[in-house]
Length: 637
Image (cartoon, rainbow, N blue to C red; front, side):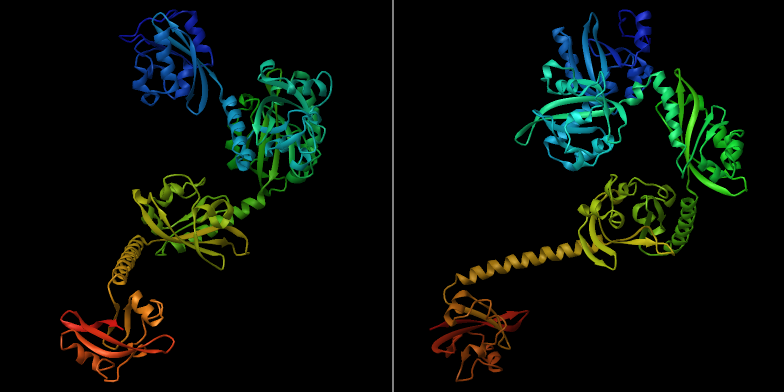
């Protein structure tokens, strides 16, 4: 252990106890009273992504300042103050742990247990209380909700349907007892009895043997919890398939026999070879694919079927080191007996016996047609890229898997991201350029409209081309407003092979448009204030230009003639005023105004109903830039 200056000696240091703690999988850390790290085991260092010598001898909060005030930090201080042991839940890396914290003569020691699976189960249960169906179906573990009284199944998620090979509606016709294997000692009644036990009388989880729709039996680990869903008390059961963990040597031998059924598969090549690659057995499809008889293949090594390019890959495999519970995928270019070449998608997994890998079982699928289409797509993408590089608009394209295959020069300038840094990237990598997070952008609307439409308001759709305008808050580190169009991408045979998007930076136009809207809104508000002011003036008032066209009339003038105030603007004063002296109608209006004094005229007003009524009208000129541009009239009955 690192014995830095200022670090006290931990009881048991450099003894068998330290060796023991170094070897266990649980993260362990010992701290002095000032929270300086005296010791941490390799499991703790690995979990937090540091080396042991980067932790020991340093203050905890200097290494992990983000832990200040979290549950662990507060629990450490509590134990130091009270001397009583306690526990706290914390997150190390991307996993959840439950820490048990104890007082020592010189400080504290913490032992952490991984509770990530339990946390995931709690999150699964929590999703039910919010009635989020989509989240419920995305949970990896099978979740079955059943009635607390008769054990009738009332809801399941997609993982449960997949696990038991039923459709959702089929499962809702079953009870929990129908899922058991019902074979001694795992009978139906004992299973139901355990489910009905109150929480305080049963373990948090139980292992049991169940049966799917096809009759296949397998092992599960089940956790259950009573909770209120809606107005009903239900039991929520979270189920994991633990069959692989339960295999005995006897069951392993049965697994060998089970492989025989795979060999009847008429499409894929199924094989078993030893750890050196020598074939032990193959199915009939292997004969059809390779051109060799089965009797020939069992005398061959898999490397004899590989092209020169694939040989290096096969020679690098160390089959004996493959983990028992994992499989491996690779692509193999296979050379047939007739010297033709096929591309195979190969999945292999080790066969263990007595705790050691003894052979390898594999399934190989012919993907030659797919590879040819991919080659054509690459060639098409190259041709498209050469063309779009000369387009003025920023343009990109993705394939059916969402990987970037085109990123032109204008797109490089718009995003400040080079094509070589983006081509081939998937998982919404391009979203980072615009939104600083992985998320769909407009091009994804073509391939996944239901998933993406929440992000965009479509302005126009024209012959499968979608057009929109939108804000991109993180483009080049600042906000920009873009115009974009997205469209499907077809090959020469008319097959959909991806989607294309073109973008144009319209930030300045958008700002101008927004400023114009704001100005129009201000004018509208000002006009409203002006009209309100005029409506409250004494007398019936209107304004008109020199041609007699009415610009505005107040409410009193409209009421006097029986018009609404919105009807009068645009009319000519000759339609509402009869001037027998011809002093203010037509060309005479300007002459009347040039006197530059307010004058009163006797006229007749014409109401909307055509009724004439005697009135007196006072006229004042309106001046703009030294010229008379109109007048203000005030009428008196």
